Figure 1 (cartoon, rainbow, N blue to C red):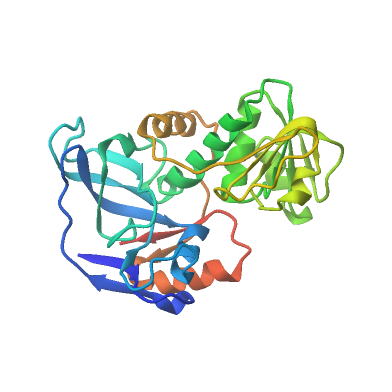
Figure 2: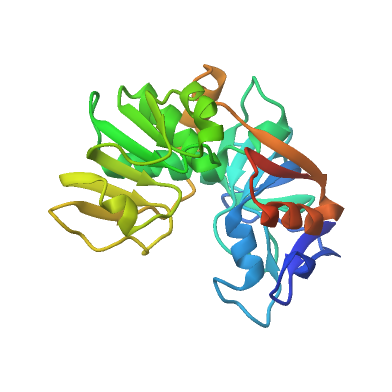
Length: 294
């Protein structure tokens, strides 16, 4: 089968599509025939060597939408089930940017009934990051939340999820994205902070700049693990490290089917054009996800 990998770090040209053996599922695992897999900034970080791993082959891709192809023992999934899953972390030697991927059974959820595989593939990593970050903020209805990078993939899901919970959301984004941010459920869209908020979800990775916009005793959550700024003024600071959670992913799928969450695709690329997709991501300005199709 074919898979996109890096064997040397660098720019988009470092991405290779190689022929490799078909992976076999072990106990409590399933093999998924990949129909689509989103490209995320973390993949660019892996490609560039930001997470280490020099001298070995590293698979790319965390998101997967497709069909269960084979199962190990002790799994409730069956061949033919349409599913989505998060293939967590740097994968050695393969990730989800491949024709097939093996994941743990408890990372899998039934695919949305109202979306095709290309759109469904944009949900696992960014949706789980957003919901797990919001959980850490422990907001209640009526609280105020600023989401930085509100027009992005994580930020957009965070806006929709928080608004659905009754939180009053302000989205920080470019002026050209203000209409989009409001359409996602933000009560306000701004290009600069206004007032002090009960909490900030810092999807744009502004760090201390965003921390200053939290009221005394409020809460801040970033999206890069272990990279949150130090606490000041009694503000509780944290950073989400996304985890694979099939049950939580199933809740997000339900919200997709209920029309609460919007799945946004910017462009699709063939798996063989993975390097071109990385080059497009590097250009910036993408609204929605780039998606690879084997």
